[in-house]
Amino acid sequence: MCQTMRQETIFEMTSPCRDNFRITGYHFGNGEKALAIVGAMRGDEVQQQFICSQLVNRLQHIEQRGHITEGYSILVIPSCNPFSMNVSRRFWAMDSTDINRMFPGYDQGETTQRIAAAIFAALNGYHYGIQLASYYVPGDFVPHVRMLKTGYEDVETARLFGMKYVTTYQPRPFDTTLLNYNWQLWNTKAFSLYSGHTSQIDTGTCDETIDAIFRMMQRTGIISPRPLCAAYESIVIDEASLLHIKAPHAGIFRRVVVPNQRVVAGETLANIMDPYNGKTLCDVKTTADGVVFFTHNRPLVLQNALLFKIHTL
Image 1 (cartoon, rainbow, N blue to C red):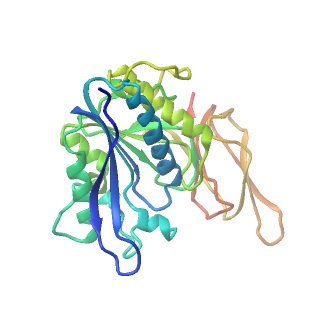
Image 2 (cartoon, rainbow, N blue to C red; image 1 turned 60 degrees about the vertical axis):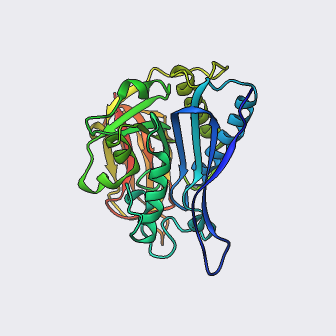
Image 3 (cartoon, one colour; image 1 turned 120 degrees about the vertical axis):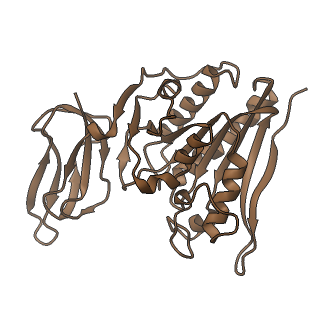
């Protein structure tokens, strides 16, 4: 007999002004904890929550057809911070703390510590973990898998997503409170998926990310094979090797390239214009051949702000 989706309230807290704060999880399959997927941790991660909502929808259909492998269970948590999303704040609305900097949490601590503790308790014990994360600086980027170098990172499994890039980076001291870092220390093979955008929905990169997740589930035997778009042979890069290009002036930013675009040394990537007289202050150029990995996407830019990351070829 096919299982049916089960809904669970992972954390609930009363509110004096609104409905109760709730974090809801959706369970599929039954048995061994195979995979947990976490969506929006911050209030502006609309793309991440949308992707999770589509995963919940599609997993219901897959489960009804009996295509989740017998003895495996999947957990999806679409949103961990609905309050902040309701009021359009990136971090916790009351004190601007970041839930994703509170792991593994403390159930007797401050509000965001208690939220993190409840989330981590629900996630603990899963073999694989996926967080749909947002980039640490505002901008657009090539969808990719990202992992902290903890000594427990699993590059070969990361390749199973079939995304163009798998990136690794050396954690800094304050990264030790991230979900990805703590998941790895607690014996979960953890991966952060970056889906190209944050505060806006892009159905193209959404579909690409969902395909990557289902591709990984197929290749690890969690679900039965199903038709998907062609995969990449993932390129593994250390983020320290990316070429960083910063703004030589402040002003109005007008980019002329987009993520995943090939560029050659000397090519103009953007213009920075004087906000009062409209004159071009400078043309921002790349110093090497490569592929645009990340681009700033705001209309204004400050001097020395990060504008582009280039994967050099």
